[in-house]
Length: 133
Image (cartoon, rainbow, N blue to C red; front, side, top):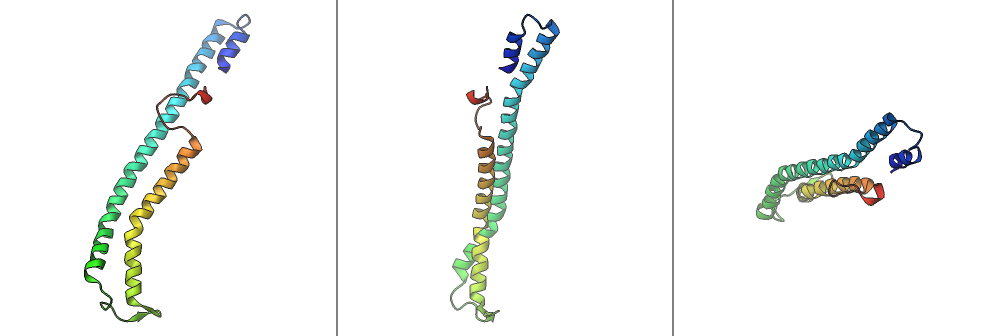
């Protein structure tokens, strides 16, 4: 809009080369918004692919540990004390931590993507919003 305003304000005083340069500048600036949106969309897609892969890698061991704990571990399975705490509590705590890792990973990715989306404030088709025109 500023390039059009400058072209209108100096229509009588500017040369043809100036108008051509303003037209090229307008074209370049109009491409900036869609390019920015495209790069941001690619970033989100890449992060979601990475999230899916990492959740798959973490969920298999988490399911194995959860299955083992529910199937084979009972109240009298482990006896003894380590650092003043029952070994059963240590094993149960470690298993719980391992089984929650896929959920914690998902929360961290969602928080990161949400922060990027909030700070850039534009998700959607490759068009400029009316506030950026």
